[in-house]
Amino acid sequence: MPSPRRLTARPAGPFAVVGSLVLAVLLGSGLLLGAGALLAPAGATGEKCDSDSSVSSQARQAQAVFSGSVVSSSAEQRAGGQRGVELTHQVAVDLVYKGASRIDDIEVEVVTTRSSGGCDLGRLQDDTYMFFVSADPDTEGRFIATGDSGTALRDASLVRDVEEIFPNPEPPVDAEPPMAEFDRLDLDEPTPLPRALAPGAALVLIGALGLVLARRLARP
Image 1 (cartoon, one colour):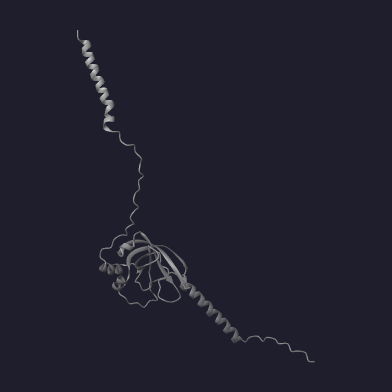
Image 2 (cartoon, rainbow, N blue to C red):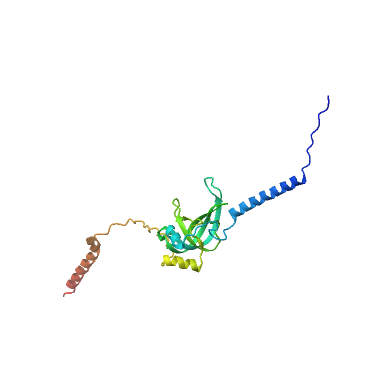
């Protein structure tokens, strides 16, 4: 009975090796670019948006327009299985142009998103922006800025355009302080007037009687 032939793997040819290396490099580059797109700060707002809306149109669509400085930011994965990250920025509000009733604190939260595609703002730089935002219906004092909202770094030209629409900006107004509460003190009822005057009247009467008695004793 003939012995079975042993199968040996033939070494891959040079073209196969080169092809595998090229494929690995391409895959690695794609992963790095995708991660960078999610985490890198946005160098300019609305880079992926083709919106040609004017400042006037963006101001009308926004529920609030204000200028402010980004103080800090944090990132977390988007909820509901959505791809990308959600970035929450703490913003110190400078001037409110529209929606003053929605901004009752000197610091608010502005949420942006960052994904591998679509129209978004990504992480904002620690700088001063003009914000065109919509209010978060679930959280008071929290606003959402999309890539085509008009939100951008504040400069003289943008300020001029906004002030032509809203010429009287105001600083943010703090929420009304809580009303002062006072504890009721249990006070004794006031003494009736006759009782209060009685000791004094008695002393006067005694003095008068003494004076009469002294005069009588002084007579010869």
